[in-house]
Length: 360
Ligand SMILES: Nc1nc2c(ncn2[C@@H]2O[C@H](COP(=O)(O)OP(=O)(O)OP(=O)(O)O)[C@@H](O)[C@H]2O)c(=O)[nH]1
Ligand SMILES: [Zn+2]
Image 1 (spheres, rainbow, N blue to C red):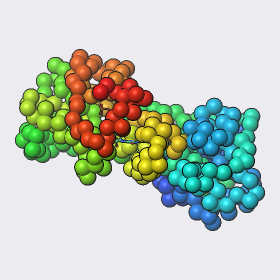
Image 2: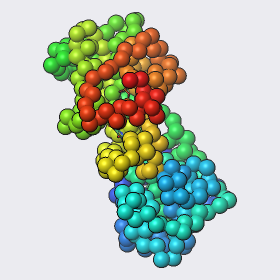
Image 3: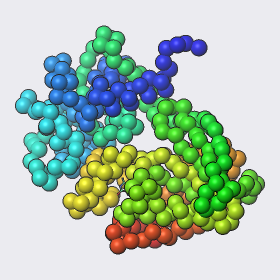
Image 4: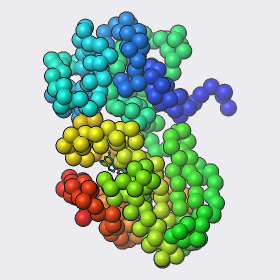
């Protein structure tokens, strides 16, 4: 095996570079694009990138819509950087925190025509690094990455790899007696793409030939650990484990897809927008995300790896059921999970029912 990094390793390195504020180079047959995440870009690096040529800012169409900028590329927009645009201009376009306080960001000019596939890959990569989906871009020549010691990615193979489901390694499992059940075992799964690990908590020794009581729980630091009253995650986690304990069997998947897959920092940005009056879905859109950025295929893969092919799923979310079925896991029953309603999350739960199809 070669000692040089393979595609997955280069992608993991690129995510890490972007989080550190370092640009990466995306290449296809037509050329090369230098890309930096707006969120972590320093004023110095912005200056250095602008010295290379005309820069533009790639944003998702969701973010462009809030900014009233034209998105000629369908799901994204490429905004020309005006000559007098400084670091603050880039931050204001990327981050909606001050949209209401400073509404005038225009006139915004969007690039039209030409291929935006490198920018599209750039935004996918930035999202997978759990940063705000906004990327500063400058076209560069082939060979630029090698000269400057930057990570270089081939666009076509990278786009496929980011779309593909990462294979999970079962790293280890051990008994952990829980309040809900002393017969509990924690399994650790590690994705080969270097992203966050996911966990499975197996209660008892469920029969692999019968549908297992199961829950796909998405990480919620605020709800699970801090006891936040803004959502129902903590009580749902405890109730699900409790029911599995009572039945003597079950499997709870703890998927590290914090904030419906946008990461904790972005979830806190969404909470700050909610304090300005936007609901949970609107807040995600203003940040440039879709309502739900989670990948439930991971859950199906973990169930399969543990030997399950049918579940009684504890959920109020019909999209989870549809996704399990599409991934080959049969859902024989939906088991409702109605706990943790508080005055503070009444509106949140109502919006999920109205806009995201959750069953109340
Ligand atoms: N982006 C964002 N994520 C949130 C917000 N509130 C909770 N979350 C996250 O949402 C995830 C939980 O998803 P929910 O929408 O509550 O429920 P669900 O998993 O879709 O459906 P159920 O199976 O019925 O619980 C966790 O990852 C939380 O961190 C919010 O206001 N914004
Ligand atoms: Zn929560």
